[in-house]
Image (cartoon, rainbow, N blue to C red; front, side):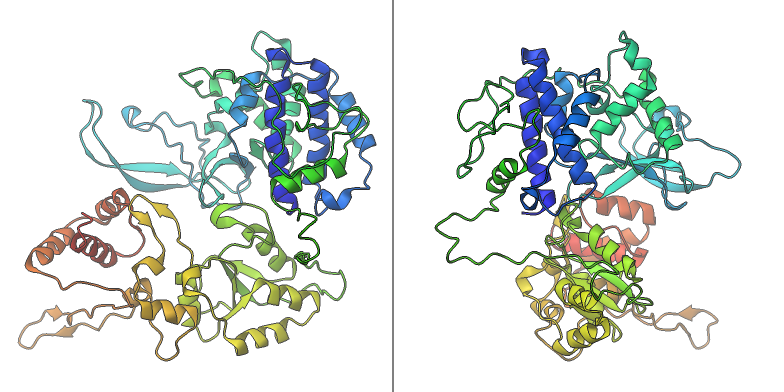
Length: 567
């Protein structure tokens, strides 16, 4: 178990223990205060990354940190029971606040159709840039009919505060909007004092509460400059910026006691601790005023995530070596040893930790590469030097990398060893000589869409899959998207006529199985070519198919779907 796995379990126990001991439901106020102070102590350790795991900090004293959090909570506002109930369902921070890194992200709060998109709150001045998009609206009112509507979206300027939502598959943040456009969700404003409470007008109180939500509901608060953080505070304080509360009020859940740890957890709570709900033997208890018992807490965490081997298995199961991220300046690791190298990541990196879903470990791996001078891009091209392959890699990126003579496939351990020993060129040379082999069944399923997962491996022939896996050599089998990008034949002039005619377009095989095109399918394709690109993309989106590519590719994709009875 790594620090992130332990932290998820700590948050889970913390939320449920708060529900069991909350004063709104008859819990003891002192016990609740101890639970919150304990959590703030552990949160400080997690955010500062002052340790690799809680188990490795068994001898660490936390008494001073706990006492500081205990004193700070003396007159602090206690969020309502409803806030903890709403937060109990959130596995990762649902929102991220940060300063825009470029001028390319568009504010997704572009207003409503009924108001002709004039009700958006984006800060607009003479330097504001826009981009247009087209969206299909279904008729729900008599004010408009079905059809496509052109929308003008405001681009968020670099350095402005923006807020994004997490994607439940990739665990990355998107759908960005200006701070001024953000509707503060119920999960956030439920933690604030009521409007009749004088503390609701105190920015210091609201600032403290928002800080308490960091890594729980929000993330990035501590990275904001003070001035921008106070802008966020003022925005959250204003009830006119709040989103509506759920129609059905959250009903209190009957917790008689705090949850018992999973089977296998041993050890009693240390003296002076509280179970937060009266739970008897075995109930999970957070530490009390005498300080956090990291050893006892870590044993429960490891048992919960399956990280602790049983005494019977310890003699036969060797301890798994923990991956250590190399850091410039430590040992032989030398800063700048990846200068000039362009890298792309594919797959997930659970040994590194951080993030989740399809983005598991990628942010920290990217940070590692950049700390040594390397550059990380999102797509494989002729300029790519390294494709860093993790678990469950994407077949599309692997295929493109094998088609690039300059690109070398390398796994994370090979690269990390080269960085730690300052032998990166040698590690790359070894990786190129061994020609990485990948299990054909290990390719990622991709992103879940309405029509299924979008993995290239699910729509490719076995020949193309074997080539991507490195099991076959010879002429590279192009992926469909790459085949579609092959240079078109030059147009030639017809004799006796001044018009140019193009040669018949060759089909891109790419290892994809296709059926012969019949008369009905040919007519359907002809009808599709008459449609606009935005219409084709909406047709693909409604059917859960990829929407990238030029018009010819979109028509081809829809024609293939028709032949498979997808339309």
